[in-house]
Length: 87
Image (cartoon, rainbow, N blue to C red; front, top):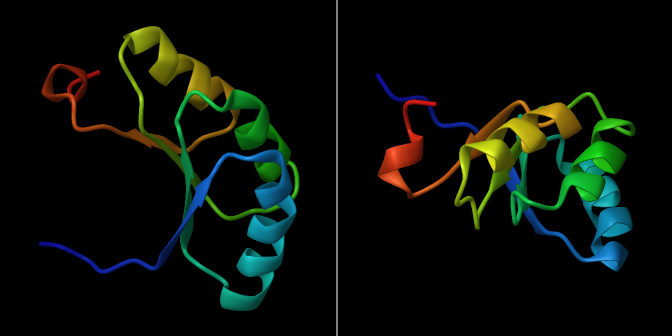
């Protein structure tokens, strides 16, 4: 079964971190996707300022990048790379 979940997608540019926080407060999404997934500092900053789960997505090439995104505070990682789906 599939469930529709509202998600806010934000590109990791320093000025968008404030915009993302404002957007989260008004729209109250179930999750946030931070792109690219290798933006560990942005993931940590947003995680420290919200209880909304964060998905890291984009530019994932190595399993270490998945572990780093999770360590930075992401709840999960999205990628089109099929070889990463079972990690």
